[in-house]
Image (cartoon, rainbow, N blue to C red):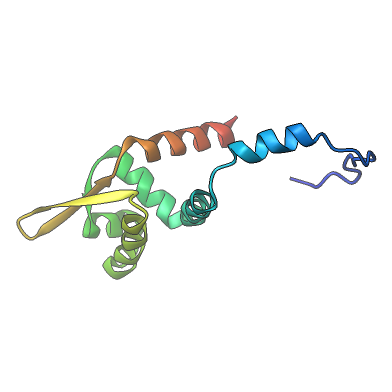
Length: 120
């Protein structure tokens, strides 16, 4: 995307204080904004997006994800830890195997909306 060479500028010096107060009162709190920024920072990594998309299809273990993405189990585990901390994925044990899946439907909706947007 190329930047607009002549973006529109505000030439008025007056502000609508009532509008500013209305918007300010409806902005999310700083903690929520910071958490959202961390979420988007996490999702900005192509490997983590591939992991999440794979887990949207079915639950997989670290070795299966590693083979799918042609990565070492250690590298996959590193990415999964980040995804777990942000509560995007969860795991379940079955004997000695740990299977990962999507933590909840919120991440599904975020990714489907993002995919629809970029494919538009």
